[in-house]
Length: 258
Image (cartoon, rainbow, N blue to C red; front, side, top):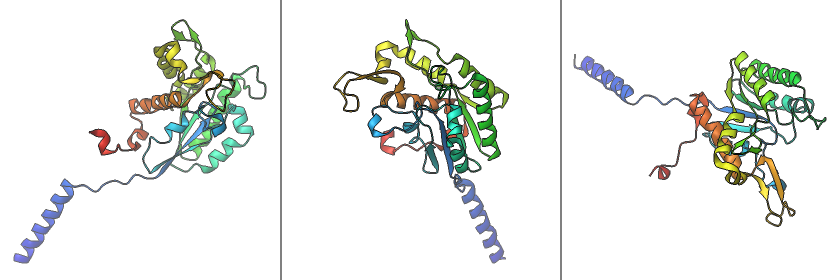
């Protein structure tokens, strides 16, 4: 009788312990693959302080979440395919991964025939990327292109209207997560105004940086600050959408919470 009671008591204690301290769930490792152009790409030191938003984005996540950036300067959906970059990315994708797809800047460049892609072909290429990603049992995420810093008075002009609209259209048709970076970055940098937003893009006077001895005025590409703010907009939108990736963020150092 005493033995039976001890067994019952032991089981009760174990049950209580598990209810109070549930087993932790170990997250499966996952990889985020970034496909895009110069506004997303990692940069060579010879190009600094030019920075793609994919660089700061890669450090937002926990140790079980890896980020691989395949984005490259000057690439459109067409050249990303023809150069074998999409094939290389797809070969590394495993079930459960995510693929961030952001194009448009170079696809719409009519004056650069080596990269220009018609709207119809652009849409079909995006659809192909989505289909390929899903065939690998991974999740595609579409992003509209980030804004150029072309002010008209107090607001930035829309320069991606057609290609951003096609990206949004595909996201709706294929029921995909969409991060509308065109709208988000335009609002963000417009709110800063002409002078403050200039500090986020590649504006350097002559003699300030060894990579640009004659200076540079570039309203397309970010510097380190602009890239970080763009990456934070991506992160904030993932959180706003309650996206599963928002559960994979790096935990802050306790001293930063004090």
